Image (cartoon, rainbow, N blue to C red; front, side, top):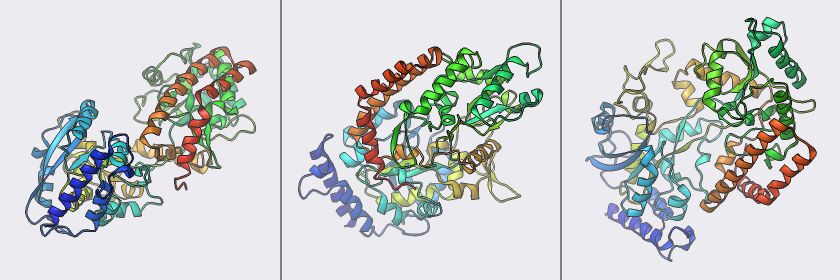
Length: 547
C-alpha cells in the first residue's frame, strides 16, 4: 500500500512538471499537484514498505531491480558491469540487482536529453563524468528529487564523512532554490591552490645567484639566465621565461597573482577580501603584468612563441629542461621528470613594490555524482544502495579494481595503496565513473597519496602559510546559485569577455601599453555590460555561507 501511495505521489510530480514546462518556475505548478520537492519530502518522512531493511545487509528482504543510467569517459573500455566481480559481490550483499545503461561521454548529453524528453527515466543517474542540468531538470522541471533529507536519513556513511570535515564539501551542490539534487562526488587531494611558480635552482647555483626576493630581482635573474650561460654549454640557447598566452597552467593568467590579481581558471573575475566580486582585466595589477611581460618580450627574456604556442608545445620545452622560470601545477609526473623537474624548485613570488602577491585559492568541494529521478519507486533502497557504494573497501574496489589487483593495504600504516599499473586495459571495475566520496580528512586517513600528490600538497601548504593565497576562494563562483537563464547569460558574456581579453593581452605584450590603449581597453567592457555581469555574481555570492 505504501509503495502505491509513493507511486501516486511521484506520478503527480511528473504531471506537475508537464504542466510547468521548461520555461516555468516550480511555483507555477497547478494548485493541489504534488511537486517533486513535496514527493521527496513525503518519501523521506514516510515509512518504507516491509521489504526494506533500515540497517545492515541485505538492504531488501526480497531482491529488487533498479535501473541505473551512467556516464563513462570516452577513453574507458570496460566489460559489462554485470560481469564485474565487485558488482556481483555488491548485488549479493545488498539484494539489489542493477540494470546498467552505460553511455560514453561523447553521447551523454544527447541521450540524457532524449531520456528526459521521453518521459521514461531510470531510477538513478550516476554521472561523475556526465553533466546534468540541475536547474533545468531539478529546480524547473522537477524530474530529479531533492536529496537533503534523504541523504541524512538513509546515507550514514556519506553524512559522517561530511561531518568530519572542517567545512561542508557538499555546499557546492546547492541549486538556486537552496536544495541539493545530487549525492556528491569528490576525490580529495588535500590541496588549496592551482598553479605555482618554479625557478631553475641549478642555474641559480651555477651563476652563484641568490633566490630573487622582488620583481626587480627576478627581472635581473632572468637577464642573467639569458646572458651568462647557466647551462654551461657555451651557447645562448636558454629560455629565461617559458609561457603561453592562455594555455593551461602555463598561461599568462597564472602570472597575474604575482601582481596581486588572483587568477581564476575559468573566469576573469575574483572575490576580494571584502567579499566583493572584482573584474580582473581592469585592475592596476593586470596592467602592471602586461607592462612587465612587454618588457620581457622586448628584451627577449620570454619565449618568442608566447603568443602562439599551445600547452603541448610548452610541455615539450619543459621536458627538454632548458628553462629558467615558469608556472605549472607541480613538477613530478608531469612529463618532464628528466627535464625541468630535476633542476627546478618552488618559487615564493614577490610582486612589484607595494604589491602583495595573491594566488587563487581553491576549495575541494563535491560535484554532482548521483541523482534520484521521480520514476524511482524504491527511494530508501536506492539511497542505501548509493551509501553501500561508499563503504571503504567497496568504494576503492569499484574505483581501482579488486583487492590484490587494484589496491592493497599497506603493511606499515594500514592505509590503502593503489597498485593499478595498466590503466589502458579493458577494465573489470568502474574506475572513476563510479560514485566516490572521499573528502580531505577521510582520504588522508584511509589512502596513501602518491609522491606527486604529496608534492602538490606541500606546495599548497607553503603558499598558504606564507599568506600568498586569496582570502575567499574563487570556487565560490562555481557554487553561486544562478538560475538556468543566468547561467546561459553568463556563458555568453564570458565567451565575449575571454575573446576580448586574450586579443588585447597579445597586443599589450607585443606592442606595449599606453594610457590611451589602456583606457580604450577598460572602456570596451562598459559596452559589454560587465557591471551587470558582476552584479549577477555579486547577488549570488551573497547568498553563500563563505568562510
